[in-house]
Length: 204
Ligand code: SF4
Image 1 (tube, rainbow, N blue to C red):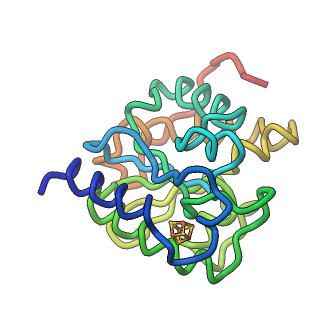
Image 2: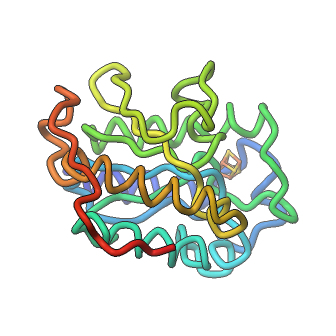
């Protein structure tokens, strides 16, 4: 099976998943989308209102900010694969509970096994803590860290940036600092050669 076929099979399975109760109140599953040949995967927390309505990840205001941040490092969202730890929207956007995370990462693990990313960008603490359980986002954001065969690049969640200007500036800075890694994921393993901001106009 090709990567595309594997992801399509997973998409169908996620759409009919009942491993936890979150599917009961959701309108759509949000398995993820993007370039199946990519070596960069972005993993957020869970679908929100707009994502649940459309069945697509990061399509609300946080998604618009993510799109802008991608352009700052020379990428568009079609260059990467975007998904979440949780595939159905928790009611009222509440935090997922540990049982839901344990149930749903069953799917995330299979998506990652199909894509084999070299760089995995975690967006927010839930995604970070799945891959690096002992780390705090406030301490490790923007710092690439090797985990097994990939580099985990922790970032603040764009939704947090929309609520807090300081976080917004730090998030933009983290993207710019890691421009080389994001543009060259196949050589990210050496963690070297990170570019600096270089006089680009700030978003914030
Ligand atoms: S949130 Fe995940 S584990 Fe729960 S029903 Fe949806 S796909 Fe299944």
